[in-house]
Length: 158
Image (cartoon, rainbow, N blue to C red; front, side):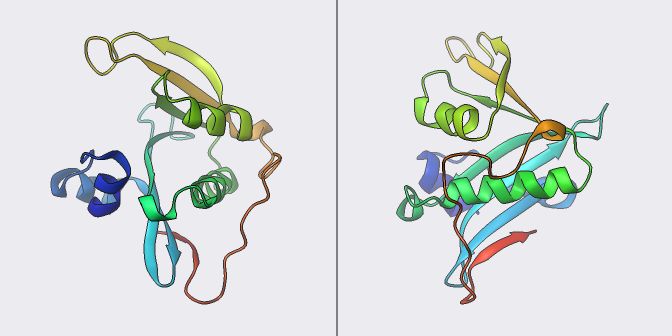
């Protein structure tokens, strides 16, 4: 996971120290192809409302990007969370990251809940997005979801 994190972001957002609590206390999903981890998504439940979750990170290795894997990973993760009683998912995104905003907002239906100035330091604003899972229909977008192959490919809850 650390290699994919570095590969996807050109910097490590995760570390050996942060990964362990996420694996033990969060909800981590993995995307596998050819028996190899290609991507992952990490969610944490909100302390005051356990029906809310926050997407800490989603990452797909560079060589597997632009193939629909990230879409499939997020679709399967959100579907799992919805089917297990969560009502809302939140995340933050850089306002300048138009590709991510398109995926989150246009393809999945996330809505702007709040604009946060200097969220990650001076000049590092974030858009705080929310998806209401109770009104969300999985796969209701123009994208055709991938079907995992039986040869060691697919989606797995960690």
